[in-house]
Structure formats: C-alpha cells, structure tokens
Image (cartoon, rainbow, N blue to C red; front, side, top):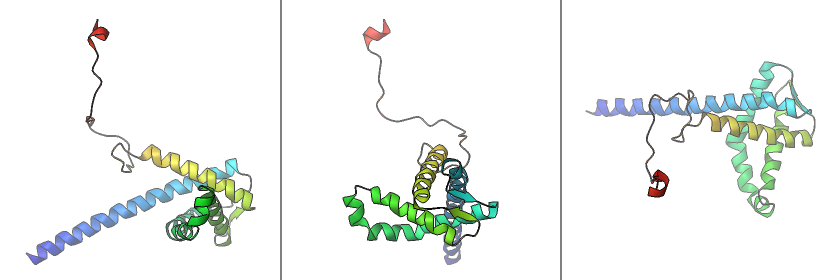
Length: 163
C-alpha cells in the first residue's frame, strides 16, 4: 500500500515537472520569436548568430523569472508614484543587461532597450494570447476536438422579433 502511494506520488511529481517544463519551453520560444522580430522595429538591437539570439532569449527569460520580481518589489514606491511607468524602465534595464552576458547580441543604448522592451512585451503578449485556450491554459495545438457549451444566460428573441 505504501509503495502504491509512493508510486502515485512519483508519477504526480513527474507529470507536474513535465507541465512546468513544457510551459517554460513554450515561454522561451515565444520570447525567442519576440527578440527575433524586435530588430525589425528597433534599429539599435541586433544579433549576430542564431546562437546569440537563443542565448539572449534564454537569459532574458531567466532574468524575468528571478531578477524582475525582486526589482519590482524594491521599486514598488516608484512604480506607484509613476503609475506603472517605472515597470517599463525595469524591463529596459533588464534588456540592456543581456548584451553584457551574451556575446553576439547588441543593444546600442538605453533608448533602444526601452523601445525594444516594449516591442518584446507586445509581441510576447500577442503570441501568448494567440495560443491560450478558452479554458485559460496554454495549448500548443489550438485544435479542439469538441466544442464546449457555454453556461450562462442567453438572450432569447422576443415575440416582436419572431414576427
């Protein structure tokens, strides 16, 4: 009985791990596409090789996951005073840190980092919204085998409209 419980617990942990890793890889792909498209709109951002692009997207994802929350908490008063504008400054700072750690990825100045962070955010948001299902979860394939009925109030036609 204890071995069954341990096996079920292990299987559950493996399933959760796969879900987390799938979500991480999905977010990394979205960030990579966003970083790849950004140089089209912002002249001061460029990458030399595909490896530099992948490394920059990976590092940006790691910075967003671990450093950004700390910076947001520490700068909460500034964020409140500026009505959220300072979040754009934090995003630009993180994008400007990436070239110092990834060879082959270049951001010319803070202005390029600022506009690049805005473009990366918009593209990431659009791509994430495109792949998000009606249940709020991310689906790699958007094909649903069945249509789920929507529960709630419906608008019934009145007798005047039926005539």
